[in-house]
Length: 149
Image (cartoon, rainbow, N blue to C red; front, side, top):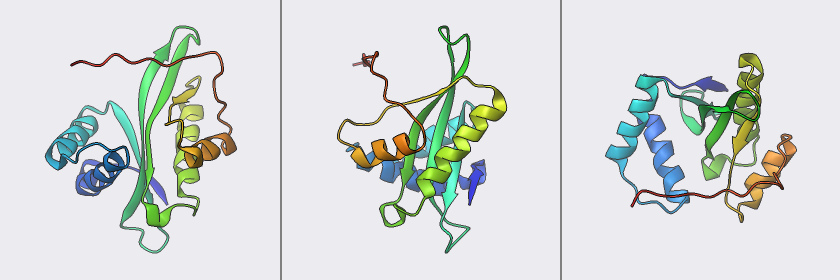
């Protein structure tokens, strides 16, 4: 089951975000993670979907977080799929596919032009999933970042 996250889901979301950040080798900061998610949900500046295991429909084991943006080139709204995570014990059961499917349906329902995402170069499992879902690796773009020190 997939459903949109609400403020009453904060403790489960924080647990999942914490595990997601550890996967990306970021130090766990549970208070900051909780505050970050609380702000996203309060401001409604991101869309978060929760994915549940078939064994326990009350206990989320994955999430996807999407941000709205605009594209001048596309002349319209786009979505940034910023986060996708499924607990390791529940991977390979189609939950990632269902989470991405929910994001794609949201894109279609709201008239957004496209979904952008990025993943690590060595995250081959995620790359295969995205390609199976119809995502195409851009060959004409290079991503850069500039970070506040």
